[in-house]
Image (cartoon, rainbow over all chains, first blue to last red; front, side, top):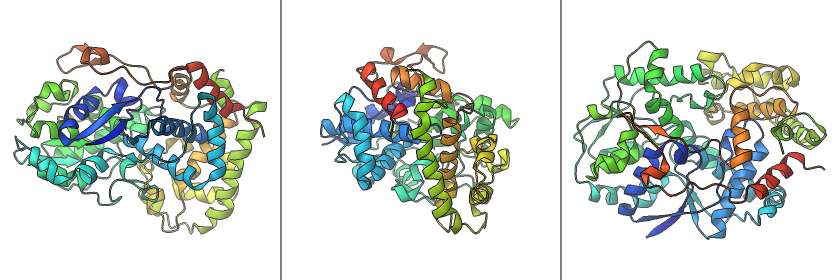
Length: 288
Length: 175
């Protein structure tokens, strides 16, 4: 059984409970053990516009906490995963910056060494667990529901840093969905950004981005929309009604975390997958 | 420590400013020359249609050294950090990274930080994460938080005083 330190970040453990609940529910079935560690802080990525050194230092601090326990890190939030991967890339190739960051961390008796690997949700599901194992666990196939996949920006770009899938034509989530019995389909807006990062300073524009993409998805007759990022999910699911107002459309697109759809296909009941937190009309979809 | 130390123009900000200056000069001297203004970045820019951000123009302005003009402009804050410009540039110029450096510079120069960034930063300083645990509304109109869901206690810095020392060092470190 593989084990990882679960690095939940900020948004998942403070409000996007459905993601955390569904991860904790399905991971044991996939033979992945998650260890909860104390003392983590923000990954720093939301502060990159304010002070990039703060971003690197916060990421290094979190990695150092897992390294002290000899654990690799599973970061389900793609933004955290990007921040930590970038931090690792910088510190592993630049002794001087590493020393400097470690001098900051010394106050907390922490030290970044570069031993721990950082894996994303797609790394775990597709590359570590694999399609075969997921397929073996499917009890209630997803009846050919037509699904629009949203990867989110940080999971696939910038590829120079090492991301989880191809930056222009990612397919790993589609392949997972096919194994679950769903029918993912291409749509031209697939790589469009959710706009979520503008929430801090231009919330209306952020919602317009969200609304435009969902509107396109709705017009193209998709049954469901799937994402893997708490920032994107907050836009598409939690704020769907408001997003609809920005494009003058009544949006009724059921939005799920990938881990929730996997759980439903495994025959887990919806209470255990946090479906009560999905504010988009998920009940429209008769699955599970 | 207050938020002022991390963001405002004070003696302690000199190191940070110098560093960002170096970053910008490096981008200007070593990178911006590679840009031949094909505007592929702008054609795919997520912020272009709605907010008129034009990454290729950012690089052109950088090339001319018009940094003050850019840090005084609101437009640098319209980037959605989608990284498409960095991904697609045929010359490996990364406008998004230039924009991060410009925003960092604006902050270090004591320009007003727009929107919620200040609140997030304040929250990191006091509890280590960008927001505290929330009660969330379910689709049948109940409100629930972590503890009611049987989730383990949230992970955040155990010793806040020491954690703040780390952040303080970062902000006020002198040469």
